[in-house]
Length: 338
Ligand code: ADP
Ligand code: MG
Image 1 (cartoon, rainbow, N blue to C red):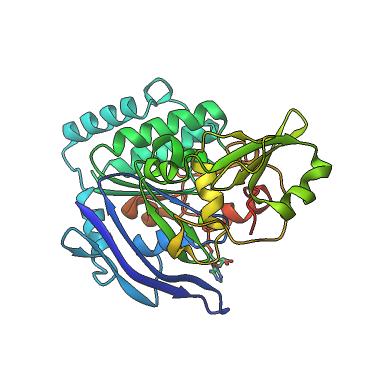
Image 2 (cartoon, protein in one colour; image 1 turned 90 degrees about the vertical axis):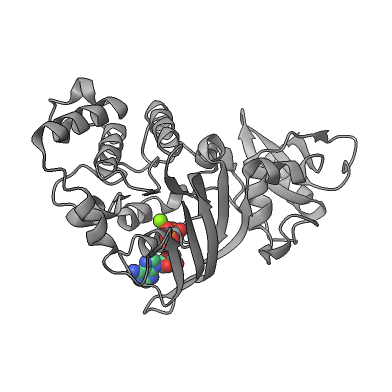
């Protein structure tokens, strides 16, 4: 099974071009859609789930023409008609075990923590044996343990179906996704396997601990990928073909380096080679430090009643109010340079 997205565009009525000719091929497995806030992730996810219309483009899942075939949702909904009582009990019990909810199955939904609600949402989504599961910023607001548990659950599911994990948190993708796309301003800057992308910059990322006050000088002389705070000092990552000077050490690059190098390019077409274009200094605290710790209360409530109802039910998208909850997190965006 493969989801093929071709040239999907969307301009909102206020003139914002949220998607600008997005094309992607997404096979079975965990696919990370990675991009900063406002890059168009939610718009794309909602479009694929047929929760909103695009201006043009195609999306094909197996032999289903997703965007044309408005029967898609009811098709999915019909699949959930598990009418035989005995069968239903078996299915539900299996899902409660799988999502680690069995022990708390008698508790009230309202008493669930954020992570538990997310797992409940997944259990719900899995009821229909979907071939495609879309989760939009599911880990925001989860504590580290909940987040790990949730990501593990997702990757188990991703062994058999297409799971699209849309997130601005690089570590989410680094931990569980075998393929990914980086999106910015409605355009796909690069796609592929995280490992390949990291391999491409190996030997070209250099690190140095500096004082924050020295940062402007370094930024004017080097291609600074990111700055991360380490025990009150600033750890600099710089992109260069060779060691900039003996005071720099070679860094073992990770997906964050890939991400920030990719985002910093004006034109993503050649994202794999050449130095990042010069850019103005940004706010500078490290991407890693912003990441999984992002604030912001509830990450939607997939299990909540009357919360988008048929939407989540049929399309397996949650949280259904993702856009609303995302905007509350805008200030905790990664420290990317723009
Ligand atoms: P992301 O999920 O990556 O944060 P979104 O898809 O929510 O990105 O938003 C992409 C762009 O479209 C942003 O500039 C956002 O402000 C804008 N946008 C999103 N939803 C709407 C809407 N309903 N009306 C107008 N603009 C919107
Ligand atoms: Mg979003």
